[in-house]
Length: 232
Length: 266
Image (cartoon, each protein chain N blue to C red):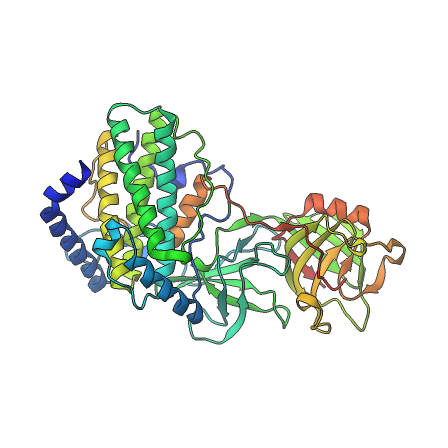
């Protein structure tokens, strides 16, 4: 077991797939204005976790919607990973406890972010975890990668957040992700807090890293069957 | 149990949250440089890990003789002349093509400006050959492709290259002089099949090229690459601007070429 593994090391030969995320939404102003209303309503009607933390967005920016959708896609990935791992029945002892607790957290994160974003929420991608949910060693190593990456992703986006409600939500999730990372690192026999300062990762770096895993199998649909409208 | 723990540890959680807020505020003050997984904090006495050097100029994403990259548009987005919001708009991109397939763009280069990654993409708009900068997050994952299609109007010939090596060639029909096939740099953006119209043959590729003359054509006059029900006319100047191939040639091409392939009409 290594504690230096990164997502970039996992299955670089796996399919490089499109549509990791419907990460981002409009960045034009008209789209933002529509979404700001959606977002505000979504937060007001959100679940217990975010409802207690968030304030009505009021003036969420397009960048914030993009960041929230970026976070949602990471949460989709984590939630599905733990759900599949729990369903496999392959985990026991500390790992079984970990997957039950953390899996529930990630599913709650997904629900909360979806409610916050309302109709602006990105769709859930499809996943292929390549057997890492069916075997304890592969699971624990991958779980550490995902949690470390999640912590770095939230840290990378926090300075970009412009709306207090979104920042509050992001911080509330970020600290929990850090606990998950420490927990699985401890189980794996790695230092729970290896450095004094965590390393943030940019959105592009996260995209590249997750793309490299091949875990996300959605592809753009580039083939159709309608009559062509080309000039002929 | 989780709820009970959360209640018992509420005070500690709040304190930690404040600590995180303070740290984040500190990051603002110290203006960390976030770069490919590393952050440097210019704090006295703190030695950060060496940062990878990121090129100051744009990073090339597509090489005509090597690997090119394309990505889907995640939601409607405006493209700018410069990698700066507020600069002149050079085009708008929707999520879907007129044929209902995911809208993809060829990614040419990427640059970071004030913490924001921008990508210069080729645009399916008039005037032809337009490009524009969009935020990186407006696009999905990069897909890599090694093919490149070149259509010579002079030779009435289409040639497909992979990794710079010729792998296929066939005669073509192009636009009549009054409806010329536009020269320039484009990309293939979708593939249609199982449609009812026989005039397009068995397969039709959509491209980002548009007729500069037939602008009122349905969907805006996009140039396609497709089969035909009049193979006797090929090769020649016979179309409204589209690139026509014999049906056996378009079928062979479809085995070798996917959407995302850069297209040069010379």
